[in-house]
Length: 239
Image 1 (cartoon, rainbow, N blue to C red):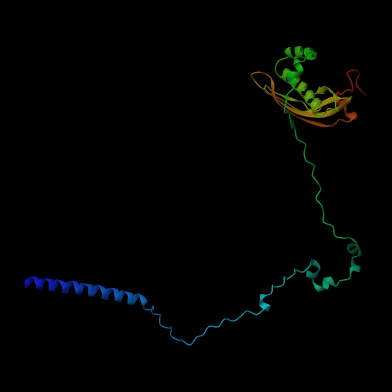
Image 2: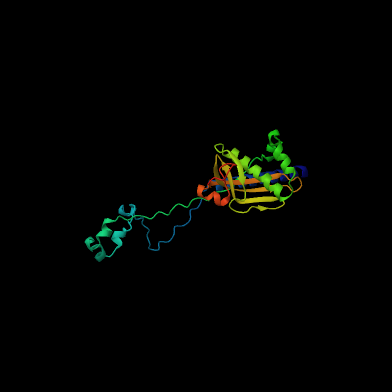
């Protein structure tokens, strides 16, 4: 009898649990199907908003205001003045002055190659080579730079045939242990003389030229030759 009562109580408990689960599922489904609540409408405060379209004329591009010309900017009395009062000004057109062109100053040309060693190595230059051996110090440097200058002009100006150079013709040269600077030199080509300037740099250890820059000037007027002991050839002075 007790066994039957226990089975009965267990059945009641299982039935109650199943009934509770079915009710919970039905409640959840009902909540999902309910429509969402909409917010209450705002109270009417008496104001209304109206979109007013912009007039077509206001959409047009504004016209550019032209600046008055110099003539229009003048006072009316000045514009109305008769031109006959100043006929010269009326006849002369306005011309903008043009600044004169300033000539670019001449620049020294830096030698990309040096030729004095090659010239002295030539068998035809044996006499010059022996002569340089007999010189020492600044005089040797000056003669070696003169030789380089003649060869640089010969290479840069094939139309010339330089054969003599006077480094002190116009201005005394500046000679030091490592450099020679000639500002008023002259060289002869085809019985005519030309101005020349050059800068010559030496290596102190070897005594060889390591840099050279020069500038060939204009022809020296014939009337100035005698004052600077310049001659057309190696004979008598050209009077």
